[in-house]
Amino acid sequence: MIRIPFILLLACACAAAQRLDVSARALLAKSPRVHWGVHAVQLKTGRVLFTHNADQFFVPASNTKLFSSAFALTALGADYRFSTRVIAATGPDAQGTVSGDLILLGGGDPSLSARRYPYNRENPFLEDRLAPLRDLARQLKDRGVRSVSGRIVGDDSLYEFDPVPNGWSADDGLFEYGAPVSALTFNDNVFTLRASAAGLLIEPPVEYFSILNELGSRAGEPRKIAAERLPGSRVLRLTGNLPPAARDYFNDFAVEDPALYAAMCFRQVLVEEGIRVDGGTVARHLAPAASEPIELARRDSPPLPELLQVTDKVSQNLHAELMLRAAKQKMPLANFLTLAGIDAKDINLEDGSGMSRLNLITPKAVVRLLTFMAARGQLDIFRGFLAVGAEDGTLRNRFDKSEQAKRIRAKTGSLSHVSALGGYAESKRYGTIAFQIVANNYNAPSQEVRAAIDRIALALLQ
Image (cartoon, rainbow, N blue to C red):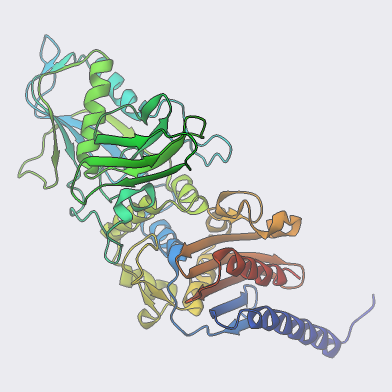
């Protein structure tokens, strides 16, 4: 056996670390007007491989989801499932009638939708967007329910009714990425609107909004479409021009009151399934003094890891917010940070998704979180939540499709003037590396900054 002197091994390691330092600093120097933060640590030894402004605060954007996901996994456990229940004051009588209201009781489940689990990159949704509500309706029919004399009540009272987290912009609530937070969430609290020469289509086909279609159809003029809705309003206005030969317009619009929307969708499904409903629909945001005691139907979510995988791979904001609220019911956030060894002075979280610009996190705190999850023996499960470089999720079209990028599992982050990447890299020399790279306060095109982040991440693989 050939024995290599320890001093020679140490010299080789130091030389490699120097090359990484030189390479990373050269990449940072190419963007001098960007406020950069980088921290990279070898998991096996805790050795800091590269650091730059690691103790300074940065707006993390969706790197916040690393915290909400780790918090949820720790507080709730890998076997946790959310439940959505259909309850009533009484069961069906001999004629199959439920007297009084039928309540769709939210349990904070982000998966009450037609989304496929586990994560399906190529075919993420079932064709029938009303499928989970249809399942509940069919359970009711199996219980003998044939009619409801009262209303359909959407109840989201499990969590305090606070649909817009602190620090979100006023116009975020128009589109899917800013969908309001509710313990009763259906179809990610959005519907899809498609406009074409043939008219308008909505999916799911439930009329929650009044849509004012003021689109023109002027040939020879550019395709230009705008959508607007006043806060609190259920009127969506489309203006602009959609020429006859132009491609269709489509967008995902957030609903104003998720509990009411879920109730309306459920009522429609009940009628379609042959259950008569005499009353209308209403939302209930405060729990009654005495809850309805009879459970008539129930839907349990997939296990928590499958939900967190979707949350992080596609960066689903609403899911992250629901994870944070569920975790807080089991454990104070401050207790989790203490458990993770993160100084409370190194972090300020106002939401779970990273949409809030009031969030502040240091790169060192991000890496400390990543090392904590590994130390708990949860590296594989936590890393499995994250997008694979150049392959899936929000990293599918990053790294110029480099094959070696598949050794990177990370969470992206993106807001105006903010880009971030945090996760794990499998280095040939150092094994698993926990890292965060974040850029704030830049005025360059976002794609240029993201490309620089990708090059720094790839440098860690050497």
